[in-house]
Length: 419
Image (cartoon, rainbow, N blue to C red; front, side, top):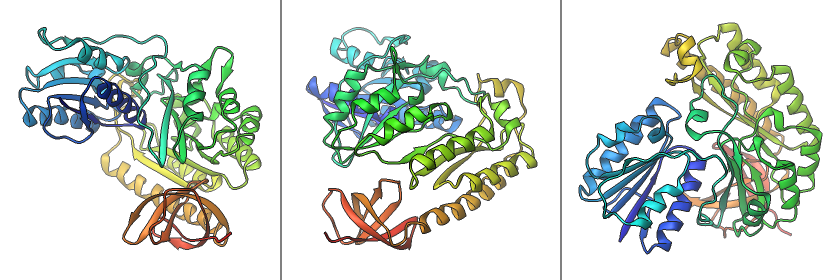
């Protein structure tokens, strides 16, 4: 039997799809991640933007066209938000299971398909549910330690779909990280800053894996996580990658308040200072939402300024996308698209200049690179502080010391440093 597990959206979705694939393989299926002819399709959807929802619906339609007689199970955030939209795709949509209990898809497959289509069978997940371990990739592996969100930022629909924050047991998460055979392991979740196993938090988990052989990198984190205790725990991790993807969203206090982000620009910059003091070579990367409905030109200029003050190694800038069901959607009128587009371009231009300044600090210095792909005669990979490095020739996928030669493409060119 052939199955396709097709993933849209975030890295957490991707990890969960990996678990579903492992579960299907245990049931005897041959599984692909690509859209091709199969007997079973599991579509793991996304609802972070309206465009992501549209693509999710389109993907289910593609599966129907690939094999009208196949069974289709739809899971993920878009199916939680508007389950009926996926049932309209045809009788072959056997079940719509939502975002919170993705093991449900495996339970349905395990039970067989002798009954009539189940339709919507969404269940709430109140405690962290262990899934089969996903496949461990050789270069970069992802370990999910947490799900759900308690923050309720005014622009975000995810807490309504993923449910409240719930965390994996320290022993279980630590075991997977310690046993990772990948060169680098990324600790991920919807909001890992809220990781909590009883009295233990993310600092305790990091101490539990401090001797791991795999290089450990953190997924996106929040300002509240950065404390002296947490930074001290990270300093004890033997192979910690000092990149901090510290969510910002806006450099304006008034916009942050409208977003329900619960910190000020001064507090954010203080956390950046703490990171640099603990890890002088750290890369701080971030996300910025541009054109939030309450954002004035003055507010936007505050975002431009904080990019310079924080010294970001890289920024991801996105125009605000209204999401039905959120407080921002109910309260505010959207700004013109042209204005949002123009501001995104200005922010990215500033971000590129600041990134260049960060990269220039490392020319002539030796860093550790994990090779990933060889394209057009260059092996590409990332250093511990998330600099994308290009080295001439094809290299084995094992960590290598490289000396940064010059800025190149979207990162830097490096040369293997001989022992």
